[in-house]
Image (tube, rainbow, N blue to C red):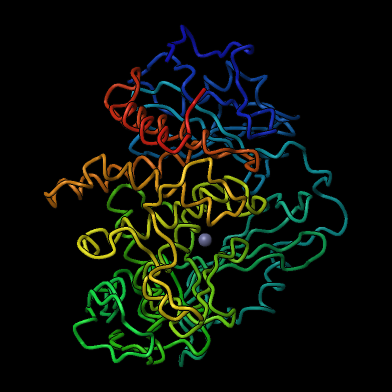
Length: 545
Ligand SMILES: [Zn+2]
């Protein structure tokens, strides 16, 4: 990696990644580092970097180093510094976009830098165009009028905990930037609680400032401890019973009692990271004891909530506490046949039925959660076209996460399977849904994302084994899981571009090598696992030219 003498990036050296068509994305992974500035504030470094490369910021927007606009001097279209995030690889400074002093909702770019403040990567979700609508035109509604529009949907007036916060934003909606009122409301519970909306809650509403139409209404509440009885991950593994039939009597020893972290006090399965509100006839236990068994209403719902919550809390302890900006919605028994899916636009997981319900098998739950995690890290990951490599990486990541999380439970039985309980309920029962230890290489490409995902998951599983996952010491295996998760999740951040359908497995490998470097002590050198990672992927015919 080359160290630049100053912050400006020579244009001829700006390599836009092959998988993006956005002009304002500098694809610099592995190319250069700007000089370290360990005592500087990360936001100052981000501004200096962006200023030195102002011609790389697309569109009619002008860079302004001030955090707040100077009254009367505000330019029409401006980009300025916002929040700073920390991760195992350093700092990530967000830049925000506004027009006539009004923020563009979601309009942001991120400058990635090492712990020593050397910039190495820049990604952009800046809107390339300015809004067409001007403010102050006739017909624009006031904040009070916008609140009336929300009042029609939420009975909030007697339940306000504080004054609603109303601000104007430009909201990207169906291809244009609409001037909208963004309204945040905190409500007390309405007694007795009969529906979701009676609970204490925090809401965000978007109201079109000209059409007086509610564009979006979203619950933002974050909430504490309870007990659940679950399969961990499923009875085939716990009982080590290869021929367990889907209709077998399941003994008590197949169940495990676990704590539920982060539940609110509504009595529902609703908490910091997930909410089962989409589950028909959802269960309510004011005592917060969700101690069901297979076949009870509420068992699959408890499974789904429990494992989403546990995985997200594990990731939070490893430094990923800000992955989800809102609760993932769960439908534990959706009428969609023997299948499950993630719906990015609804921020929802749906688990299907079958002789074995999908959410009776925790490995299926974790696979779907994998899709949501990726979509939270890289907006719109799940929206790329079917059967593309990026989709296959998504399937492979989900399979790997599901297997990795239960590696200790599976140590001596089905170590590399997922869905081994779900598969007992198929029309023709199978050993498992998929595996993460196939011999597949790129020569076995089928053009089907689940099948091709087995190439990616097998490489990631081999990575875990080589990092120490094959050790006889439990502590070494645990460290290997943490290292592998850190590398893989960090690598996703480097795939954050607008156009992902041309992204290939090689980009995924490149991003892993970058993650290895930038989570290590000396980022001027290739990461400590560089040769190991290259070898693991080369065995699958994935290498950098
Ligand atoms: Zn999937």
